[in-house]
Image 1 (tube, rainbow, N blue to C red):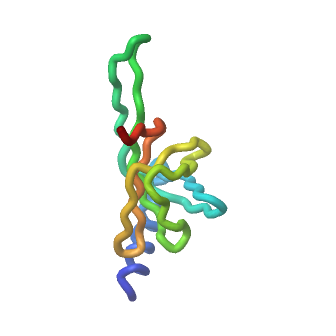
Image 2: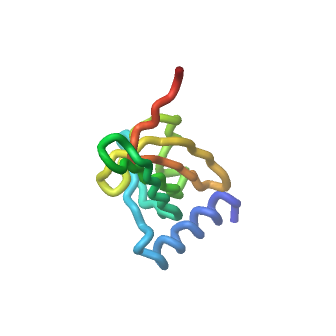
Length: 106
């Protein structure tokens, strides 16, 4: 069995065993069932009180979703988020995303 096939089978098995971590991911016209492995809620004080963002790390099968570029919009469980980073290894894509659009540049 190839490494990609084994990794995808392992991801599918984890999703089946831990349905509470299952998320639906949509990118362009593609859809995949993914695994949310981390949610980090960050809070900062602002002029009008506290403001915050949630950064998530999601794993999906690389044969179901193309690799999104940084800043791309994807949908996770019907919520639009912004891709901060994406890496692919062993048939699995690891997508880091935020529910707040990052401000970049000078």
